[in-house]
Length: 219
Image (cartoon, rainbow, N blue to C red; front, top):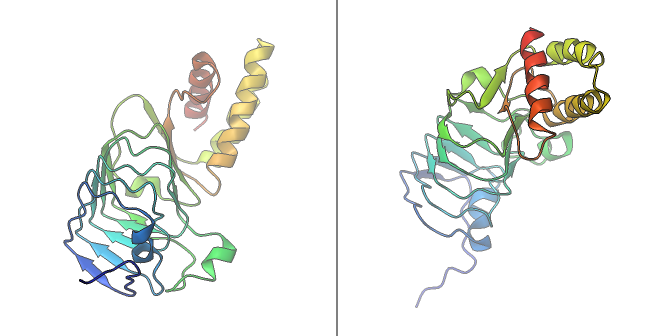
């Protein structure tokens, strides 16, 4: 009887593979951590539970993640091109580039993660962050009013701060400035951003609404 408890493939192309509704635990991790990089093309991860694996330095091309459980994912080195996400993936952070120390270990070596033409139109992005240089305008987004999309983010931040420091209510002014600080940390190296207009983890809804309004008007 064959056993595959320690099965690993590297520098492979996984083409049109079906991972739908599979519970991917740590035994699957080598597929995503392979050096050189493994590529998943036209694969389906719909409904898969991927919370116990990391995307690591894998590359995903035209893959679907409808209703996949991705909670806890931090994609510091993973690449996504033309993929579709739908449903509520959970708390996920997508990165446009790896940090300096991680970049030196990647195979192939790269300074940026490919991240383009991904479709998030049917995804719940309340707990999803796009940071470290992701080009927001190169993706497809939900059209609901619950999200705000901004360009020239650093410039808007500076101008919005000038407005918020003049707010009359001290409590709201302090909360608004703190929110700006948190946004600056969350969206480092971003010139374009997308975010929920009102987040459950943020300050009072009125403060969040006013901060986003200030940022929108600061263009």
